[in-house]
Image 1 (cartoon, rainbow, N blue to C red):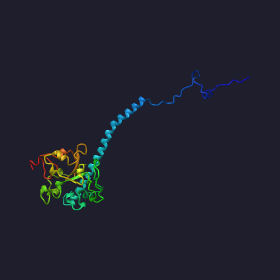
Image 2: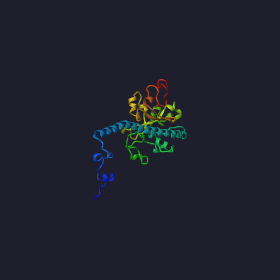
Image 3: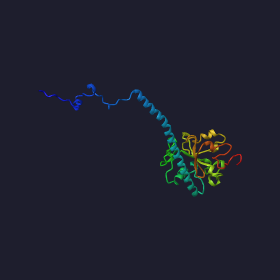
Image 4: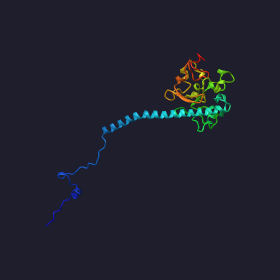
Length: 260
């Protein structure tokens, strides 16, 4: 008599038999891919998030560059205050009035800092800056730095006489805390090999004045170092009104030149 073969659950599973009425069961673990519509929705969400985040990231980077520039200018101010004590309160000259390149104002200030000064503002998009380790005569098309000194405070200026300029001495400036010595220079080819600006050529024209400095390098404002050694960011219109208050002239006072 033949023995009856028993069916066990394990055997049924091995043979692919199971479920109700002997139908194979589907595997719920197996997933499915994205449909085209779902994929397009995901891409649209990512694009929307990037559109929201990228401007914020750009503003954050610009803010970091702005802070670095102002911090560097404040280092210049600390160096200036130390230099003034040694120079009997005379400001270092621009390249127009120094026989030795080592007497250039930027090199002079560098000798009074613990950390190297940034010759270039992080927001300055200009090219071809001077390599101070090489002779300047080999770099005729380069820029000295992102910054420029006020020529009205140089050792000699024709406005104040042919030989000496008494306003080169900080103690002779009417309001050192309101007299700009360093500003940010424009990143243009016309400013190559220049390290100073001429506010005496701006009289009566704020539009012409704007062409001489980087007045909006930091979102509608720029950084300035004053003759007393402090630095701050200001809109250009705050520094120059004509006639009226002016932060560029060493003899200026409120409502100058009407009430000198």
